Image 1: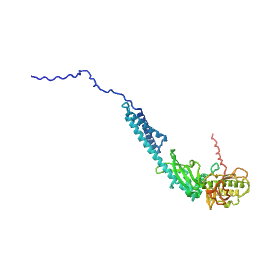
Image 2: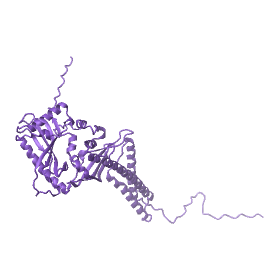
Image 3: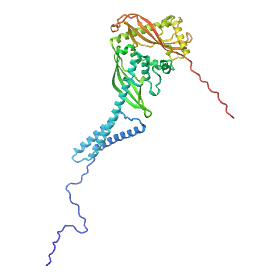
Image 4: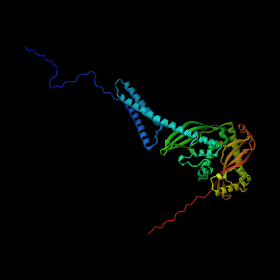
Length: 456
């Protein structure tokens, strides 16, 4: 007896008919991507791309690339947008998408921002430290302030400080060669003003760091006011504070620029950009400084009147004894030196009127420095300038002269107690130092070459 196999239960599936998909309880819902997340990713990616491009450009041109300071807003904005996008998605109860975008935007902003900031601030710290060391620490091609202090006892120190105001590629001359320094760096300018070296010595630094004033001089580095990198040079602007026996407090900003290496093996060098450096604001004077200021004004008036009497026909017969000039170091030829000295002596010894053309006392009462106290008497160096006329009564000069009149009080002065109510002191002219005696020559007229006739 054969057993029958059980019949399969019906499945409801008919041949040739497609089966329906299984039913689901949750319908498919569209979730828009958070716009904050997209914005954060775009901002972070843009800054990361800029950092990468600047790195490639720096490698190609061999010089760093720095963005403006305001660019720090971009990665900070990228972080904020990405964080807000992630917060929006997490609190949207499933109605927003884009968590991966928000996270990538946050990472790109954070990593590229930190990378650039580290590069920027490390570079800033490095170059600012180098520039400050150049100013404060004596070394090879460095030590501007220490060399100024040495200049009070040794003129070569002052010459060395002056050389640090010249860009390294064009810097030349030996500080101990006074004649060579004057020859290279003290030519009379086209408008008749003194040369570079004389202007440096007459200027702020030459006066403030004068002789004994260096004994109490103190230079304190302050904050960096600004720094940039442009035209292949770092430009550091840093404040310094100076204190001396005369100055209680005076701030100045020094502009220190770099000369970058041009080839392998060279090192970065620095120089002081003198025309962008100097005091800011008015100095606070010590009681001694207030007394010197009053005396300087009195001495200036006295010297101005003295020059007027000379120009009215009075002679100064002691000019040779008072002359403290080192004529051999004026950077003149033998002929010009001999003629210049003779012209100066003739002018002071003469009795003619108006033999000093366009006289001017350059030193002002408010100028600082260039003074000393000897046995209680106050001695001041006052700069004055005049022309020696080629013919008396005519303006055309034969020489332009810059000189220091060294004047001294006839009595001892207590500087701390010298006030506006104190009696005006009497003065003596004890020395003359002619720092520039330059012959004035007419401009050279270039002769034109004769025209060549054209061949027919």
